[in-house]
Image 1: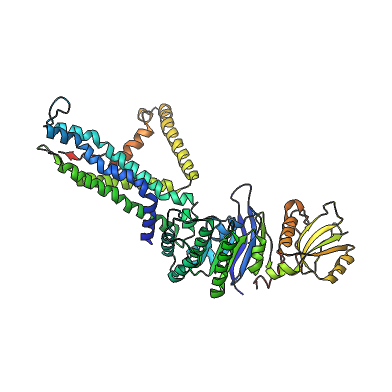
Image 2 (image 1 turned 60 degrees about the vertical axis):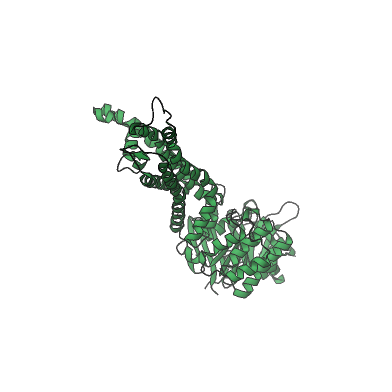
Amino acid sequence: MFRQILFVTWKATRFGMIPFIMAAFGLPLLSVQGVRHAAAAGVPLEDGRITTGAEVLEWVTEWSHLYPALALALGAVLALLVWNWDHRGTHVYPLSLPLPRWKYVLLKMGAGGVLLLIPVGVLWLGSLLAVSTVEIPDGLRAYPTAITFRFLLATLIAFAVFFALAAGTIRTAVILLIVWIALVFLGEGVPPILGGLLDMPRLSRFHFLDWILNTSMSWPGPFEVFAGNWLLIDV
Amino acid sequence: MSNAIEIRGLNWRPSKAFAIEELDITVPSGAIYGFLGPNGSGKTSTIRLLMGMAKPQGGCIQVLGGRVPDDLHTTLARTGYVPERPHVIPALTVDEAIRVHSAFFPSWDSGWASGMKKEFRLPADTRVGRLSKGETGKLLMLLALAQRPDLLVLDEPTDGLDPVVRRDVLTAVLDYVSEVGATVFISSHLVHELERFCDWVGVVDDGKIVAEMPMDTFKNEIKRIRVVGWPENRDGDFPFGLLGRRPSDGMVAGETWVVRGWQDQMTDFFTSAGATVREVTHLDLEEGFVELLTSARPEAWRGRNGDGPVRGEGDGYGTSGIPSEERGEG
C-alpha cells in the first residue's frame, strides 16, 4: 500500500522537484566556486588573494543563507504538490478507499518524506564534490554531512508545516490566516496599552512578533534549524 | 429480506440553497435499485453521504450491515464506487491506475481485471487524463467491479457515454450481478436506461424521497386520475397509495392525483365522498416519473396543512407509498 502511495506521490511531484534537485546539487558547488577559482588561479577575491581562512569563511557565509531558503521552498512546494491531485479531485478518490483518513494522511506524509531524501541526497553529493575540489586553508574543515543533515531537518520541518496547511481546505487556510492576523493585532496592540494602564514598562515594550520569532527560531523552538550554522566550510 | 442500504431520517444542509431533509431509503440485498431524480435533486449528495464523504447533520445510514461512518472502512472495502466525475489520478496510465487501486482492496481479482481490460479494449499505457470519455467510463467500471464488491454504488455511470459504450458498461454490471448476486445502487436521470434492468426504484427531488417502490409496481400500478369535487377538508384512509396531488391547472377541471394500487372499483370511494373520477390514465416509468416530480414540487403541493404532499398514511403504504413488507421492514 505504501509503495503505491509512494509511486503516486512520485508521479505527482517529480516535475516540480527537478528544479530543487538541480539547485540542491548546484548550491554547494556554487558556494565554493569563488574559493576554487581564486585559489587555483591566484585571482584576488576583493583586495587580496584567498589565502586566509577568514576570507574563505566570508565567501561561504555569503552563500549560507541560500541553504535554509532552499530547504523552506523545497518543503513548501513538495507539500503543495503532494496534495495537489487530491484537491483537484475534491478528495473523492482517497475518500472512497477503505482506509482510515489518518492512515492515508500518514502514508502520504511518509511518501513525501521519503521523496525528500532525493534532493537531500543530491545536496550531500554536491557538497562532497564541492569540498573535494577546493583547497581548504589550515584551521578550517568541511562539513558536507553536517550541512546535509541540517538541510534534511529543515526540509522535513518545512514539509511537515506546509503539509498540514495544504491538507486543509481554503476555508481552513482563511480561518488560520484570520486567527494569525488577530493574534498579531492583539499581540502588538494590547501590551503597550495594558503596560501604560498598569504602569508596567516591560509589558509596554513587549512585541509579539519579535517574541514569536525569537521563540520559534532559537533553541528549543521548532524553527531553530533554519537560523543555525549553515556553513559548508567552517572552523 | 435484509437490506443492503438503510437510510433513515437523513438530514444534511451543505448550503442555504439546498438541503436533504428526512430522507429515507431502503435498498434490499440483491436488488438493482435505480435512484432517479432530476439534475440537482440530491442524488450525488445522497451518494456522498452514503460513502461517508460528507457528515450528515442527522439521521442514520447503514450499509451492508455496518453503520456509516463508524464502520466505514469495512463497508468501503465491500463497496465498488463509480463517481459522477472521474476520480482516478489523470497522470497515471491505465495499468498504473489498476495497480494502484488494487493495492487497497484485499478481494481484488487481478485475472478478472486483466480480462476486462482486454474486453473493454483499454490502452494499457495511455494516461487516464488522455482517455476518451467512454474509455474513462469503462476504466472506472473495471476498477469498481474488480474489487468483487457486495455493493456497487454507481453515480450516473453512463452519463455522456455513447450508446455502444453505455451498453458495454451496463452489460458488465449485469454480468457481475448475475454472477455474484451483488446489490446495485445506481443513480441516473435517464429513466429509460434504468427501466430496463432495475428492480427497485426511488425517486428523489429537492432532497426528499418522492416515491420508492419495486420497478414492476412503478411501471404497472402508477395511474394518474383526475378528481372533480373532492371536499376541501376531507382527509381519508385511501384504499390506494397516494403519491402526489396537485390542483387544477385551470385548463381542465379537477385535481390531478398520482396513485398506486388503483383498481376500477375504487371510483366508489370518490363517489361516497361526493367526488367524481373523470379520467384514469396508465403511466409508464417516464410519465410516472414526470408526474411524481410535478406533483411533488412545493409550488404544486397541496398537503393537508399546505406543507407537503398527501401520502395516504394509514392505508398500509407508509409515507412513501410502499407497503411495509415490501420495504423489508418487520
